[in-house]
Length: 317
Image (cartoon, rainbow, N blue to C red; front, side, top):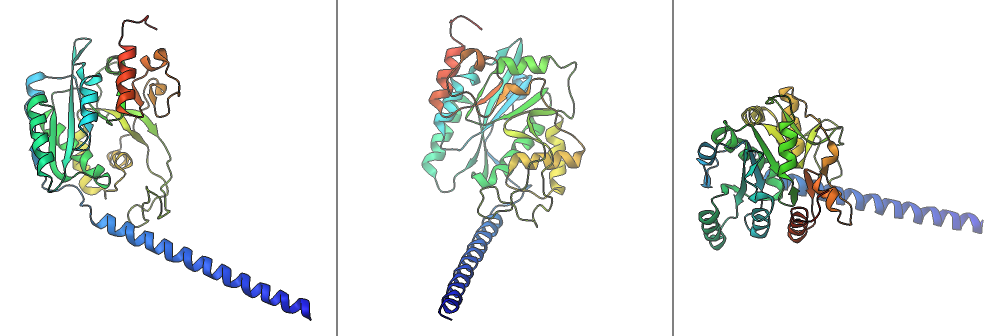
């Protein structure tokens, strides 16, 4: 009888512990869902009547570039812009083809000092495009569609466009070699590190959480990773147009894939997918780096030092 009593007490305690655990888990999940919905509702879908605060509308018409590289970057991140300006962004002419590099920014509300600094920076370098949407992680899709709008309006004469993150070391020479190795000028073309079958994350605590009612499918369509993708210049207008019929998500590269799916366009793997690198070797190898197109770096210092090394007079690979 004594053993049975203790067994009943033990079961009672265990049931209470499980009940407390599931109650806490449910409350935590609801909290994250409310936060996610609140965050989602505070970010406006594209298109909107955004306007350009700083602009370079005549750049493509005047320079007639073969490739226009757009680097989305935070307004306050002048170090990243300067690192690119003195490294791969300085390579304007490669194999007789002109490359135009521009920085795309949103705005930071009520920061007049920063805006004055950006205006001065723009006057000096003439490479900044700034729109009046709120620059934030959750607005990266808006930033991408603003990029598509600007390119479709101002650079239809260019052959290709590229979106490159600010922490990417881009080898312009290898990029041009890849594009010029194509048999002819491409249309409906987009390439990069193409991801297929990526799972939609449903955990409300995840940074990449997407609710069922926003995107009901379990997997995303194929899309090129946002660190660097290259596209024919007929695509910006098409993506911008179809975006009116595709509900936005804040994961910008997956959203590009959703738009491409609606257009019936499949991203193409590059001739050598190994030239797009997310996790490079820890130890620097100049021959390895000099053979890539896009490599994710840890810092502006690393980007500058690596670029300077494989552009030095040392023995070539």
